[in-house]
Length: 309
Image 1 (cartoon, rainbow, N blue to C red):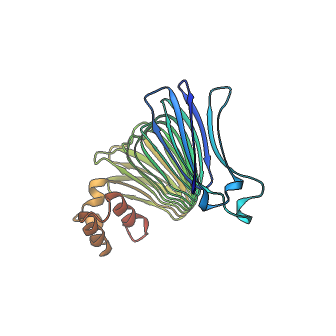
Image 2 (image 1 turned 90 degrees about the vertical axis):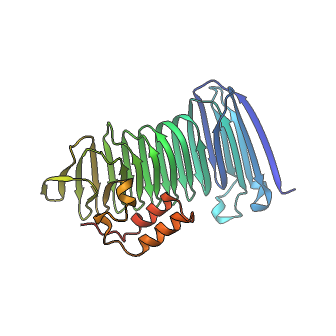
């Protein structure tokens, strides 16, 4: 027998609180129409040390539910690895999620509530979520579509790419990872702190905003009409088109892009007349279905080959 399966169901009352942590494997979370939280866990016995890999699934007195993978005794980095464990979780909304994935894939879809999600050396995929977001990654990638709500983001050597969102406030920091957000700019502020990671905002063609940058060597790279209000040391203020929500960036060497998708993908736009031949290769692969549009954007904008004037 190469697998050990566990399934638990709990009667819950929204907002449902879930704490889940995994050290190898995956966590998949989807909505349930019933007031029942269901957790299925599969331990893959031939992927590590089964005797020292435990799965804890329980409901606390306050009604919150936890699903946690633990390694008994010493840290697994100096002994046999823990087994891979795959969790599939269904829960009603609204919910309060606290998820920690180490060397694990985390996926959440179709939920509403509060999301405190962390990944270390693992990827995270988020789709059709609304609420409050606190997302962080170390050496892992966070990707998503159609997120609605304010964001807090932190990344160290991991990229974050969120598309087709309605994000009306951002507080983000990056050491060396790149952050891409596709959203309307409304409300604000949109605050970014970066050591060397780049920030890319993909916005509608009629975007209006004010930009405030403090940077040692990074700069604004915009596809919009820009009015400059002078430079004071490392500090510069600008207005894109008619001005609007505040976009603020404090960086050492990271750049800030603010561009529309149409401009980004328009090969004839003079802003892109100096791009290398790789651009055409990427576009050909997109047209053939070998790359998604999002992958193409990442290749063209995150490899530091773009040189804007």
